[in-house]
Amino acid sequence: MEMQRCSWVGADDLYQAYHDKVWGRPVYDSQELFAKLCLDGQQAGLSWITILKKQQNYEAAFANFDPVIIAKFDDEKVEALLQDKGIVRNRLKVNSIIKNARGYISYTEQGNDFSEFLWSFVGGTPIVNTFKTMAEVPAQTPESEEMSKALKKLGFNFVGPTICYAFMQAVGMVNDHTTDCFCYDLHLEGSEGE
View 1 (cartoon, rainbow, N blue to C red):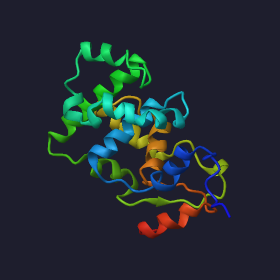
View 2 (view 1 turned 90 degrees about the vertical axis):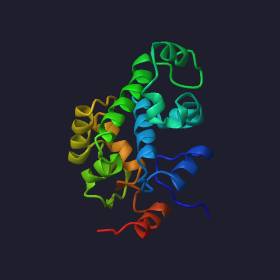
View 3 (view 1 turned 90 degrees about the horizontal axis):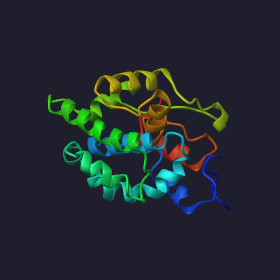
View 4 (view 1 turned 45 degrees about the vertical axis):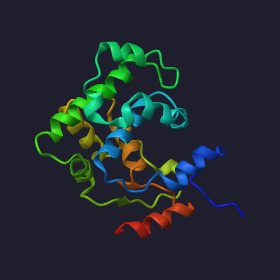
């Protein structure tokens, strides 16, 4: 018998592996959170599977999402990236990763913890929802709106409330696996629950 998954997953093996092992699992590492946030920004106007299939190319093109290295990228580097067929060749999106890296560096150089900052929008622990269908899942929430505003103040872009909510789902700040999905209870075991 096949395992019941969230209805958005589809038949692609890569997508199923992402859903089963990555999506919704809490992430606390600051650099990993930075990388996920940048990748979610690349998704704007595209399907997530498009970005997921290019993730390794992004990691190669953007120094494994090391903000210290990315923050030093110059115009010449941007032009080279725009020739890279392995990523989305959109100037605004390429520049957004560099801009976000500079915002990240500026924030952390003041002694701030990026992970603590992001997790503060959910009180430091995952919000466990009980949605039965994907139709019930919101595109954004008051928490994602607050996160979006705060990130923009730090100089980030491609971090609107909808992108922030997709990010919060991906890194386990919210458990939006539907209640019939086999991952729903797995994630409950890893969090304090409600």
